[in-house]
Image 1 (tube, helix red, strand yellow):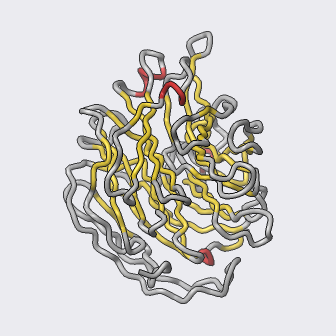
Image 2: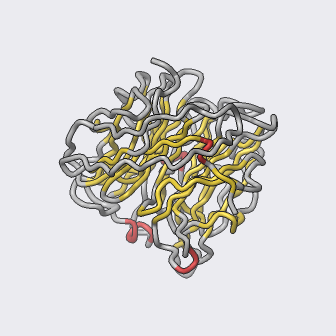
Length: 396
């Protein structure tokens, strides 16, 4: 099988309620000629692939996609059996694609937590061995009760050595991954990374967030990171952000430089936040807001591409819901936008609208040197779309 897809896959809608629902194909109205890394990709036919299989889940959420070292796409999600609620009988499930998103396997259950909730799947690909690590969290109570301090979430770790077909038994790593006064806890939901260059090459780094209680009983969200230098045997906690940081994802920007892209939870600013680490995720700069990247109150994603066009910084892509009237409707999840930076996240001059309508949680994946995939939430459906890097146009 070629490392490069023969055709672009514009949109796949998967409705997990007994059948597949697909949108009408959209016409390609002219393709810009700009490409930051190579000559223009050939035009590709637009076609709607079919996905076989019916699941026993009402809906999917917390969508995460990764590409393994064998070029398999793994689309993880929370399989919610009864309804759309964030708490209930929820499993971690996965679909596989060996043809870059044209077709997908039936749903496979990865982990189950009785009739309780296991979620926030956060996979990491070990580029050295091909092993796939997976972190997740479990709950026995709903979020509001956990935030009030009545219980806490636990953190789990497993792995696969056969390209995601089978998984090891889960291991509880809560004693290493959370502090005693943290109640709510969530890894991702997004991908973790293995650092590929610099002093900390090979380290596993995981985005995470938690809640704690102020002296007056007020619950506060903040984000942090986890890191491991021994392939997940032991984990350490990176420094905590200021109040308001929530779901995050981490990308490698350059040698010995990481960026954490952050959902602001307790805010009315309507934009993303970020911070940098220069020691592999152990300590982080102060969290700052980026008003050039509007965002509703929802999860977003960031990835680092393999190309370094200027020889210094990796190319970064971010994706989040950015409604036109964001500052007046911070809870509206729509208008999913991808932005590109080649200067370490200082500026984001090019963008592409993946989905103009309803869209929320998402994960980006680099398919090849020309194409990017996005797996995103359109409740109660989930969608997978690919686009060309050359589709990113200058703003303004």
